[in-house]
Image (cartoon, rainbow, N blue to C red; front, top):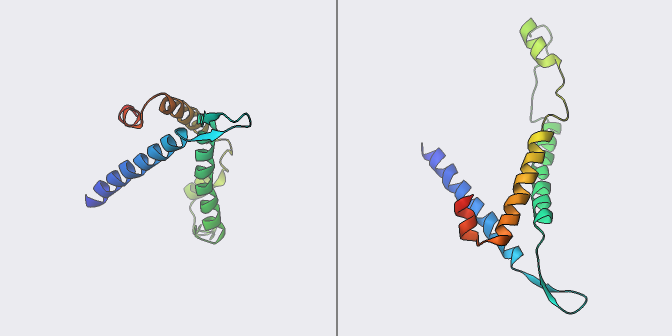
Length: 126
């Protein structure tokens, strides 16, 4: 469908912007206290900043939820026994911890690789 094609191009476009901006940060140099030019070589910091950006999406979700964007059926009589069983349990707060740790690890490793190669090679191998 046209929507899926649009989303595909949008993902490629935003992924390219992400790669170019991170590589641009890697190519920056600053003068340290000894007066020497040193490159910005901090892939773990870059990965953690990206994770902070992803956590801001969670903040937007919580604000949306708090403002009443998610409606739940609170009428006890209208629910069947099966519906009560499905909504009875509270999800574990550490449910997304393993995938989040995998995401941080993978992003850090990719940014280390981006420091060692060009942006075009990185984008093709990604």
